[in-house]
Length: 355
Image (cartoon, rainbow, N blue to C red; front, side, top):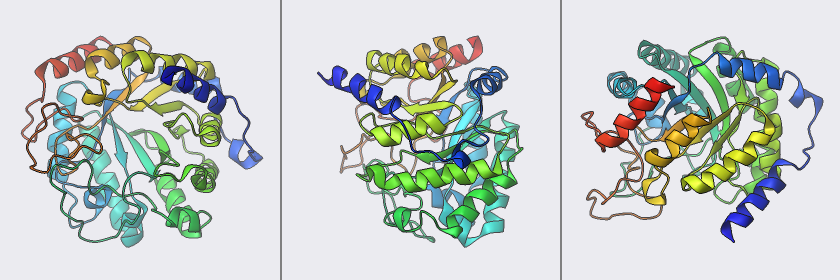
C-alpha cells in the first residue's frame, strides 16, 4: 500500500500544471543545455557539508565562529575518498549582519574547497528545523539529539511575511550576481525542502520569488530546488517544471529509491540526489550508491564528519545519555578523520575511481 500511494503521489505531483509567468520561464535552460552541462562533469559525488565545529549555518558563516582550519581539514577527508562536490547551506541573516564579511567568507570557503578539487552546491533558503533563527552566539547542542540547533532560512513566519521583501530579493540577487560566473559553484539549490514543518503551500510564494529573482540574474550555473515530499502536489509540480536539472531527496531503501528514479527520468533532464543515506532507515551506501552511479545520477549523502549537528543520532530518536548509537544515522568520518565504517569509504573511493 505504501509503495502504491508513493508512486501515485509522485505522478500527481510531477504531471500537474503550474501557474507560471513568463519571467519565471525566461532564461530556463533547455534539456539540451542541461545535458551538455552535465556531460562536462565527472560523476558528481559528495556530501552535505558543515564543519564539525558548527551547530548550524549561522555558526558556520558568522565571523566569530567561521573556522577555515576545520573546513580545510575536513574537506581533505572528503577529497581523500574521491568526493568532488559538497552541498553547503548559506543563511540570509549572516549576510544581513555583515554583507561584505559574509561574501568574503564565502569566497574563502570556495578557495579552500577548490584547493581540494571540490565543487560547491549552495543552498539559499530552507524550511527545516528551528523556525526562529537569530544572529549571534548559537545555543549548545542538545545531548544525543539530531540537529538540535539547525535553523530555517528565513524562518517562520518570516518566510510568509517577507516573501516579497526587497531585503530578501537583494540578498538572493547580490549573492548570485557576485558568483554568477564562478565555476567553483556547481549549481544553485534555491530552496531546501520547501513546505517542511507543515508549511506546505505557504512556502510557494517565496519559492516562486526565489526562482524569479535568480532568473533575473541569469547565472552561468543551473538552478534547482529538490523534490522531497511526494504528497506535496503543487510544490512538486513547481519545482520540477522550473528547475534546470532535477534534484531530489530520498531516504528510503534501494528498491523504493529505484522507483522514484524511474519516475523522475521521465523529465529527461540530468538528475542529482542531493540527500540520501540514513542507515537505520535502510538507506545505505552499500545499496544506494552503486545504483546512483550506474544510472549516472549525482549522489550527495547527508553528513561528512560527526560534530555539533549530532546527525549520527536518528530523527526523533534522541539518546539522552549522549552515548554513541548502535548504528550511526548519518555521517562518514569521526573528527580525527577515522572512517565510521572502512567498508563504506572503500566503496565510495572505488566508485569514485571507476566513474
